[in-house]
Image 1 (cartoon, rainbow, N blue to C red):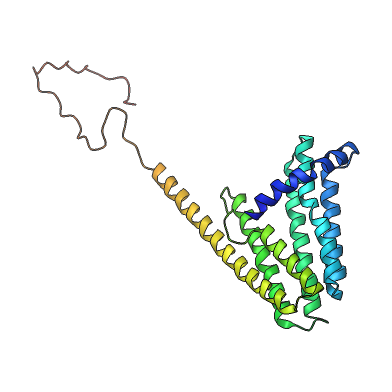
Image 2 (image 1 turned 90 degrees about the vertical axis):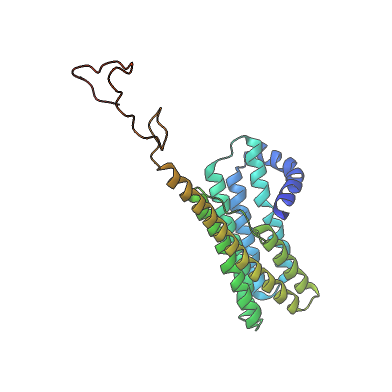
Length: 246
């Protein structure tokens, strides 16, 4: 829900910027790559050193490129499968960098095994959420359900991390990461069950399609016709047949 709402809002905001970049000859792919590099730099430079506020500001600034490149592709009239693939793949890189930065801090100088472990759980389950959907779509099924999509996970993590770096205690981020880890695990299960339901339904349809249908003009339970009695008005059979029944 948040993903759809935010995308509609930021599409309106970023359309003028997207037009300007296209006039300058900037490719949507360039925006995607630069945005991912910025997210990784902010997460892996500032988070492991405990600078949560500036790290969150840098990451948030570059995260918006995820919407900007899509707006540019639509305005150019040349959305491509390659662009969608690149964008989705680099999203996973950015997400991994964010949680890895938190893991490095809390399992290092932050000295908080619980929070570091929860950040690791969010990284693992978040990757599984995306993988399950991609794998399902690769076999022609859908897996777009769940209580914790990427936008919700990303906003909650960045907001909590920034506020903890500013004035809130670390326990706030611990609680948020715990909720996200559980929600991500539940989302994985939801998507697995949803794909299983579709696969079973598709298998039932295929099984039914293999049933042998009765020949045209004959009902499924009709008995074969009895030979007509002589003199009952039937035409006599020819002495010899030269063709087989279809």
